[in-house]
Length: 168
Image 1 (cartoon, rainbow, N blue to C red):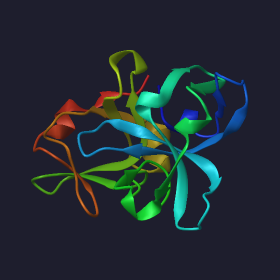
Image 2 (cartoon, rainbow, N blue to C red):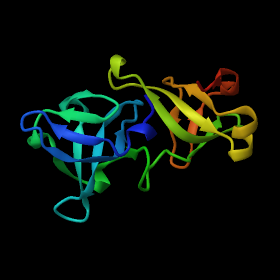
Image 3 (cartoon, rainbow, N blue to C red):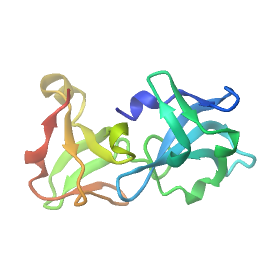
């Protein structure tokens, strides 16, 4: 599954069948895992966001995400969220992907994860610009423990360009 395709999905609690909002963004961990997601709309205070952690997700499909109950929605200080996918100061979307020898592979355009394998992120979709995408298509880089979050870039080991695969 791609994260970009899940942004905007409706979130329901299975106890009451009530829609609690829509996915606004994903929260990512340093270990390349999906920690949870943010719901649209502000929290009680403008510096807080409504979140749901991964463990409170019961199931998800193409049309909706199902969570345990309304108590699974928590208020979290926005500053406490280290990495996000789409929005904020620490977003990874559009962040450059660089190798340790200084080669730019492109920019993060999406993130892949396989729900059947748990919350681990399996790959990063990389764009090298509109024209390059049209000519050669986007590529994806399988995620390993050697790929790290930097302050201004995603850092990959040397020769990662040889590990790039065609997007399906």
